[in-house]
Length: 165
Image (cartoon, rainbow, N blue to C red; front, side):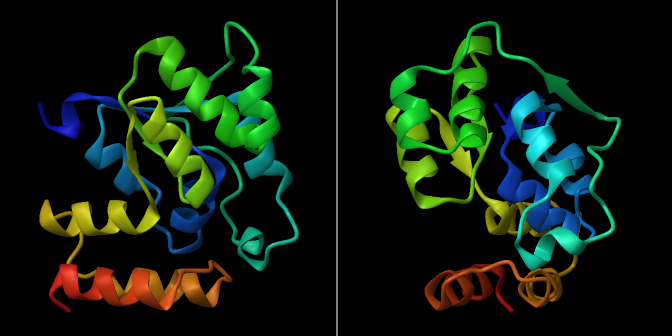
């Protein structure tokens, strides 16, 4: 089953990163539907002290589905992760959704412990290139970096190599 046939639950980091480079629509092209926990929507709209939040897109697009959890995230998740990550994992587990978009290492690790498939901002760009939705990943990554999105030198090099750029 391709990810195009499955929904995705998205965290704030990937929303900010893909908005910063004008590529939010890639989520729509790669997944059947995109669910945004209410907490994540608030974080995205409220912004943060990160320079990337100064991008013009701060509203969740209409094609993304904002959802409220049926029960609050567990105390364990809420204590170990930030509210958005905890709610992304909780919503995915609650709705039996396999895919989550999370950039932060701790959140990715915990999501995998719950048996979830994890993709990040750079992974979205790479998958979009493989599926012909974009021609190159480097320009989007450069725009993200200029907007203040941090990525390690190792991630940058691996992504450019994987993209064949």
